[in-house]
Image 1 (cartoon, rainbow, N blue to C red):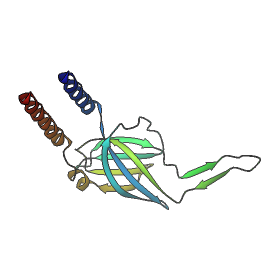
Image 2: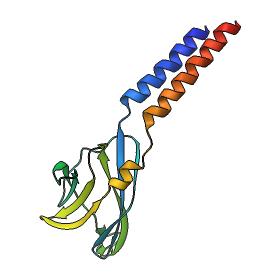
Image 3: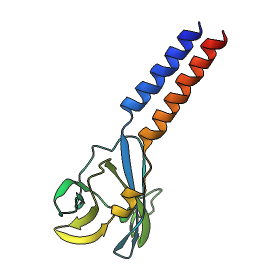
Image 4: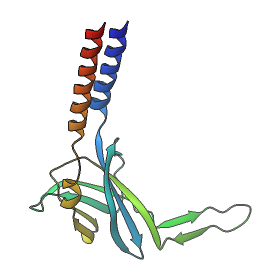
Length: 157
């Protein structure tokens, strides 16, 4: 019976590590037309397939070669729908935060945001990439501890 629990736990961990994609979350601030990078983090998840809009997000390597490019819509206007005979409005947002989700790729070092081939934002982000710790190292240590625990348990019984 104990072997079944161990097998189920091992299968769960392997399936979870195989099917979960790693993504980057780029957090930006928009303030009166100026875009600044707040931070970059990585997480488990999936990047969206909806890539339509008038802005382009580019991921570049050290030689400025484009590794990935997709379009997105920056919603800097909110439309208030008319309700109960009151007029609707369009409000232009002067300041807001937004996040761009991208596939995980260790080969890139620069990001850029463009609109109609005009560069609105560019930054070298190689310092963010090198700070990341290795996920696989922690997974390997976990499996070693799990196997050692199983061996010790088997010797006691």
